[in-house]
Amino acid sequence: MKKNRIALYPGTFDPVTFGHIDIMRRAMKLFDRLIVAVALNPNKHPLFSLEDRVKFIKSTTKNFSKIEVIPFDILLTSLAHSKKATVVIKGLRAISDFEFELQMGLMNRKLDESLETLFMIPSQEFSFLSSNLVKEIARHGGDVSQLVPSGVVKELKKIKR
Image 1 (cartoon, rainbow, N blue to C red):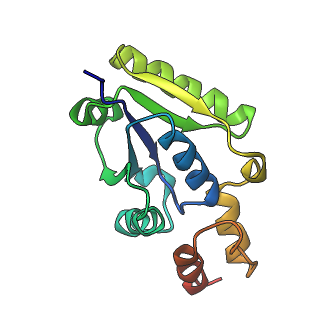
Image 2 (image 1 turned 60 degrees about the vertical axis):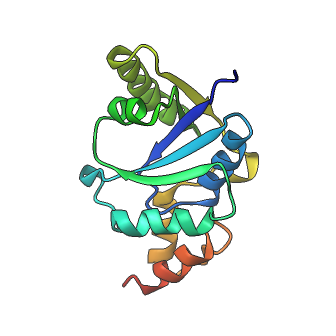
């Protein structure tokens, strides 16, 4: 019997970018199911509510059959256990991402040694892209339509500068 390979892709996704979507598409090729777990994470002071961030991802990935999008506000290892996920997907753009994500991956392994972390680099066209850059460009009236899904563009335009 084939084992059902389930991966978690956690993040704040404030907002989701085409870089995030790129990682999702590529991770779907490696796993039978991908759970995109949208973190509450009030320490990051998100621009969009948890519900909006989940909605943006669901609307963008509605044609992706292997994806489930959920909010979460529990320990990642607990979420992984409850969803039977064995791998955590993390995107890396730069060395600074690696240092933080390595520490998180090692801590997750300490808490649950059966949980692996898989680092994925973005496609070259998205290697510079971050949610923070998108918000900064939008805040100054710049065009972000090539960086984020159309639903996000629409909501970013409503934000006061």
